[in-house]
Length: 452
Image (cartoon, rainbow, N blue to C red; front, side, top):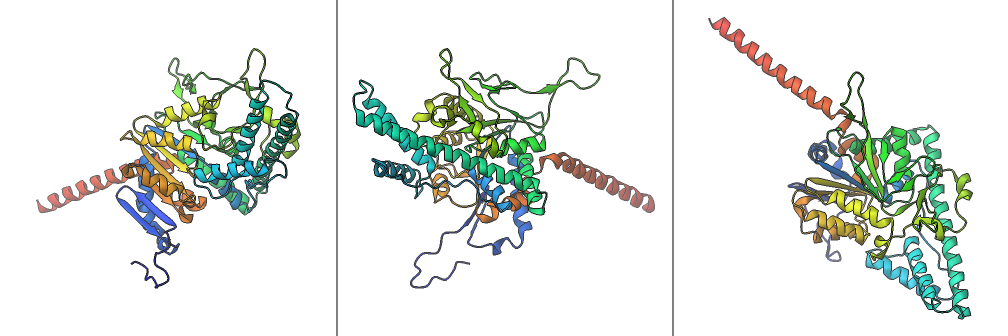
């Protein structure tokens, strides 16, 4: 039933819940529609379970996952807001950051837009001084803004580690909220990661700089495969050999079996524990330095000038940065994983604010056998609806948008599949079916005997 609109209210409020799965769809403005949750679960859970059986399964996670876990423990997540510095060209940098944010559908700039704008300004000063260093004013302004950039990056990294520390402390409290949040994180990862070994490995992509997914994988026992090779100082390798993990069963020789609980993992925007340890003979030598999860006391071990060494990739409305090593390799992995037949891509907590990622997803949808599942707490300032309406592939997109579906407890406990017990369910269903057939045959034989 449509709401009755008054004379002042010419248009109804936009629905906060949107569901599109197959031929089933509905929109709602409140939580009352989900009082009978079982009827929605019977439609959504089997659909998502079927999609998880695709040949190639991928998961794209944004900052929404970290925010959801932090909220469950009643702690704050990373603050992305910024303050305008008081120096020359500050207004121009602020306007550039604001325009960058608006170009991708955000009303206010965040620290990523600010960092990118400062980087471009410093590059402009370097161009001015490429012929000569006689311009004393340009040198002074370049050094001043380089110092501001270092301070912003240092502060940003510290905020990320502090968020990790709060989450880890919440997990280790062993109270009801901490245990619940830890269970939700592990169940969320297992819902996608517990695929049969005979199928292609789950590939998780994230735009986050924190290490929450790696921490959760360690807790649940999932083994991660990425492009880093080594033990003490893993090195980023450009070669992609399709390496996997196998084991030899007892008593069997020459017949290795695929190891369960293995996932592929790619951090599209880099990580706070990546450093560019360049050398004369190796200009792009990317290492993964040991930085314990949530240990703020170890933060002093990071480089003094993060702008020179830390591999932080600010969100950009342009695609220039994707051509730089190692991000070209990371985005090549993303395109290779999703742009193939019979592929399903789940997104959770991703606000579709990165054009370079959205373009790859649009290319994926040009393949008829691919499918995209968009799960989000809100419409991300209209960016999710905009992507859905402009994708021209509505039959290949499933929507679960709204606070009801974005809440991690509701999503994990009611809608996401449970592959770890899926085989048991199928065997139980087959056993019940066989028993019903046997019982029917026995009853038929008994009836024939009595008639005779």
